[in-house]
Length: 293
Image (tube, rainbow, N blue to C red):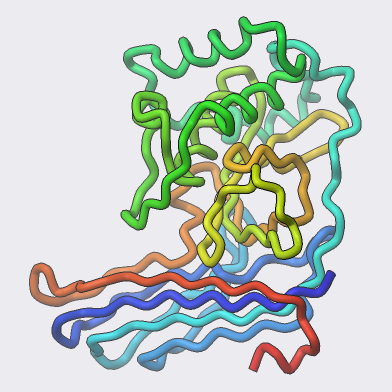
């Protein structure tokens, strides 16, 4: 399936401000399940772009600005081909809530993704995990059970504020954005001994009318990947109860949510100068590579 993705992020200010370097993570890397056919990034005011790979191997563009402005717009156009994801096949080893068996070599590489990155001082997260896994009536796979418990037991809300809620806050609210729900799932399965990482990208649900899909159309999306023995990194989207679904379009992966932000940067100006932030994502079937222009 060839897709055209246009992602526009717009910041507005009350007066012209000076922009510091901005870190853009809006281009995926090629893999067996995603092939980049064409790409374009337009930035206004004009900026020079320097490309690099971050510590996770994500493509990152550093935008450097020369002139102030009261508006910053970053527009990305992608044409990509999305193939089927690797659905987990080694199901027999995932029937109980115990630590998976990783080889010594895998454990060395996976250790940063296995260690919890948030506190659970009042034990709310551990208590919630215990309650979900104590119920033997559901799927025996602890990953599936936790993902579905979030999907069915937590409300979904769109949050435009920066940052991600701590797992305890999401549990207390019983609701969160896609990134909040993904982070709750990640920190839960890490406490079971699994390696998990945060993923930012898009949900393409054109032609998919499943009412279970509740992530907002026209926005960025977030989910998790878990390293399953024998299958490697497998996608789990607790917001929509999806596993290894080709409608998930991965852009960046990271140990913590802040490292996978699509746009991150600073500006210098008077207090309260920023008036607004707007994000728009449009995904459609690609007709030709010329769509990027």
